[in-house]
Image 1 (cartoon, rainbow, N blue to C red):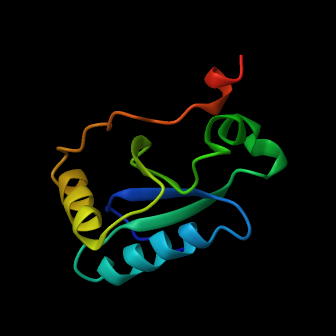
Image 2: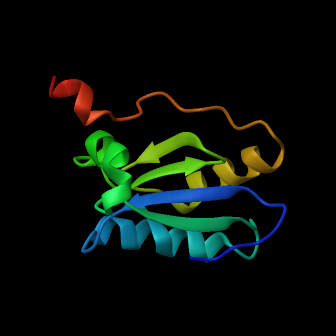
Amino acid sequence: IYELDGVPIVKLFTKQGCTLCDKVKDVLESVREDQPHSLFAVDITDDDKEEWFSKYKYDIPVLHINDNYWTKHGLSTEDAIAGIEEACGDNFETRKGEPDASRLER
């Protein structure tokens, strides 16, 4: 969606028609100036994203920072600022509670 060098990379796992994903994107865009980051959208319904679809199909939006699980279902402005600040300081730790629908369906 937008890319800068030398800043945390946020991945938004989404699919077409996800209104909660749009809200998360709006929050991230609103803090972009003060908390620089890159934002990439990953459409879990793309043919080459089957692994992500099987994990996240019931829980989008799901967010990662620098390839570490961050959060699901939504994002407040305060949480966006805190997470990006942690990632800038190399203090970001993978959060607990990463969804995995494939594990539940076995």
